[in-house]
Image (cartoon, rainbow, N blue to C red; front, side, top):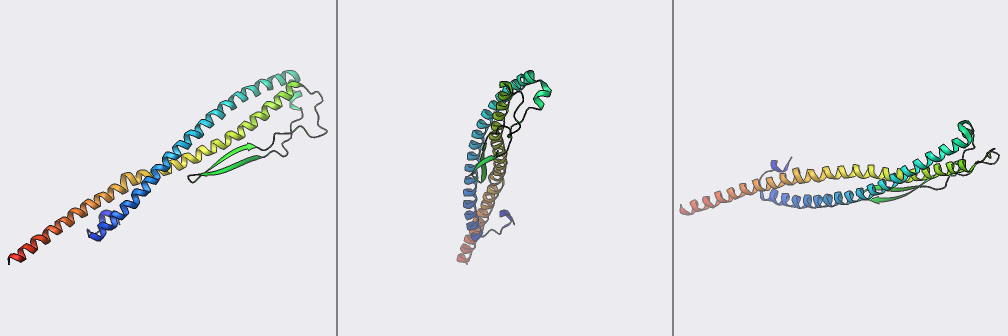
Length: 205
């Protein structure tokens, strides 16, 4: 049953006024929450833009160093060049809660190590070493960017949900309660007027 369906009694008016206070407090909380979420979204977007720009620079650098390594070893020679081992490499995540949203900071716990023993390069070169270092740095930057990207998705989803709830209270629930209070108030005033007229008529008799 909606507010407008309730019987116009003084008890109903008092209950609606209490409900209006509670709904108003809920709206104030949601309004403050969406402002804080928007501010955090902007901060995370700045981090994303900064990390993305850095990642793009590293991508170009890695491409140039890869071309230099290919020029020195040839494509076949570089394809058999011992790769760095990923043993011990993991992604560390530091989590924090922000307005009900889990935000994480991600980073590689360790850089890829040199090839395991017995797999040393037969024809090592500075070009190949620089190429490996460039892609390691690219991997590290990607790990940081992945955390910020996930934060943005979660913050955006929470902001949209909060925005829908706030607008429902602002545009539907609160106006409905206020309309019901006006209707009930008018009806009770009419009843009071009728009672006053009835008392006067009884007094005249």
